Image: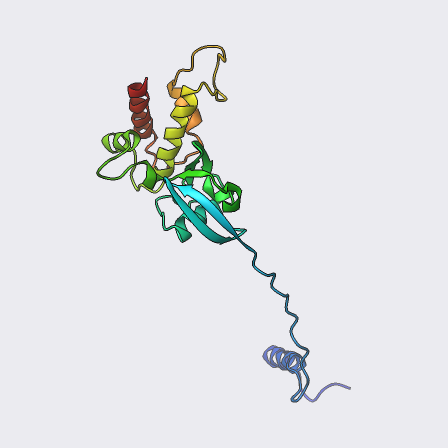
Length: 213
């Protein structure tokens, strides 16, 4: 049997929407099942002592705290920068027992008793480290965000060269180590400068390397 009149498209869509809403809305007085919650795991903390910039620092930390967050958030040494937080950019480079590492990839609890040097420990505006002075002289930065990591990395890199540690581009492993331009750029490739001040950075490092040589 045909209906008294044909529904328009607008009336049909409106009726369908109303029916769906009635199905979705629970009836008054209906008992709702309690929402399932996942219990939070208890936070585990531990005592950690670090020798930071020549000063012993005793801390109680969440065991998951990175060395980067320990320096920035707990010790307020904000010179070390958080860039990618994945170990790709080098902005968080610090020196641990004289070697450069990405602080964002290392947990603080892994460094119990270690010597940690940040940009604040290398020098001050009134008494700059030679590498800091060279960066200023050669304008080895623009925004400056990557500069602390660049400088820490450069200082460690010169120590590596001085100790005869080869890189991927070292041609002769038996010859005396020389800091050529290609060696310098390969060894600093883990530190990214988004401003593109690479030439100035290379000039600053080369000047300090020449002075040391």
